[in-house]
Image (cartoon, rainbow, N blue to C red):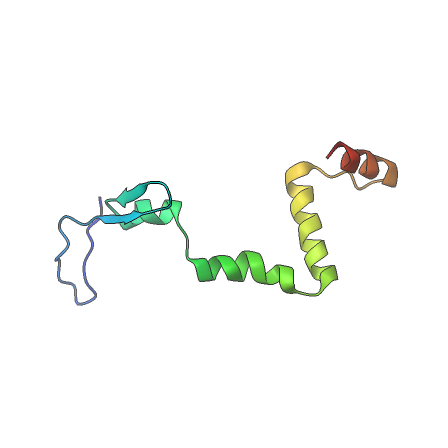
Length: 89
């Protein structure tokens, strides 16, 4: 486990733990690296995920289409295949 030190380079956190109660259980981490693997900054999330959806509709729609194409292999070469894929859900 990496050490945690203050900005003035003093080491006061020899037994460092992050512990908080979530909705259904307690979360406990013994290093910042563990904590960062599972959690992210809400402001960063809003900037990356939410604000782009509030752009003009064509830009938001384009981003959604690119995302779906990456994860679901949306057929785009002809309308018939696209509508069949869409009907399957």
